[in-house]
Length: 151
Picture (cartoon, rainbow, N blue to C red):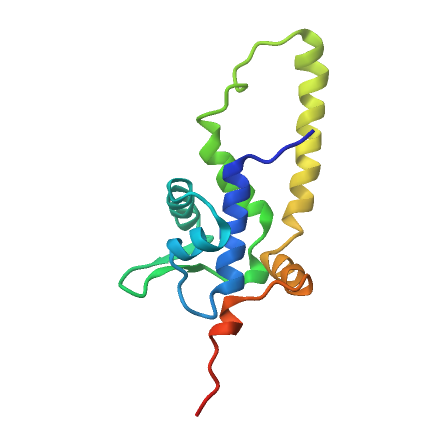
């Protein structure tokens, strides 16, 4: 079974959290940790990679944090997957694993084809799509809670 790594799930959840709860303001990593239960040691490293890749922007200062670098309809899950895959490439224990002729010529190419198909699908899913699903499932956004319309 194709299984996403913890880092990958954390990265997608963090970007979704920022998009869903931001309300135009930067989201601090401690807020993401509180809402998502993502350990900070994973989160900070992953957020920095997402900033360097252009998915997020880091905002400095006391009210700083992270926000999407562009509209959430223009950020795909596939982009996030690529960033995490690049992070994990250095740690890949299967990278230079020797194999049998059947493994090298049949099984590994099959796996590559499946990964390409999955990536195509992930490239078609935007963070906006996931925010819509979160809203439709009844998850409350802290952005909407924080709005104050008193005059």
